[in-house]
Length: 203
Image (cartoon, rainbow, N blue to C red; front, side, top):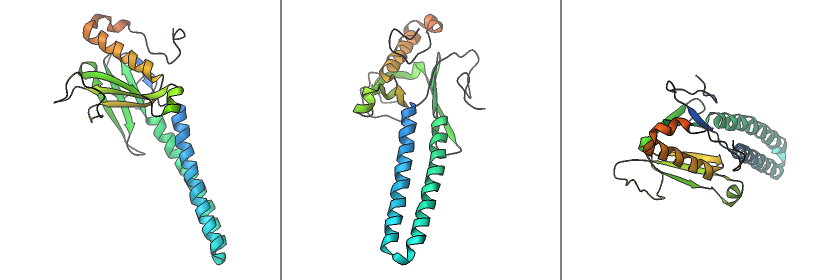
């Protein structure tokens, strides 16, 4: 079964999806740019080496072009494939994240709302912050960790959502789910889905 916007592997009966989390398209674009830069650098190195050894110039140039095309083609497919499988679901019961580990395998991690103790949000860099793109870390209750956990390192039990659009608003939204789930469980069914738009344009 393929994960879609309306269904995912392991979805429970009557479980309501409140938001589907994808990495921002710019994250994929930057991944592709890195692949293309690697292809250009490797090709240039081979071509420059070829100019140093006159008798092998043709071979090095051909090899450089072939490697450039292979890296571009394979790298693009890998980045797009990886990005398409990186997805998370925020539901009225839990947070479910699907994370690719290889080209053919995807691991899933689940965190029920009663196991969550804190939400942390932060941008990867200044540019991402200005574009409202950042990371959301959902800290889980783990042995030896106090419920008032600070901004400590991420453990294996936590779930991190990377390169999320409107990351701060999403963090506040998850906080709202936690409060409702734990303090007013009867109202959890009334929570509206998250809409990644400026305030005042969401509903």
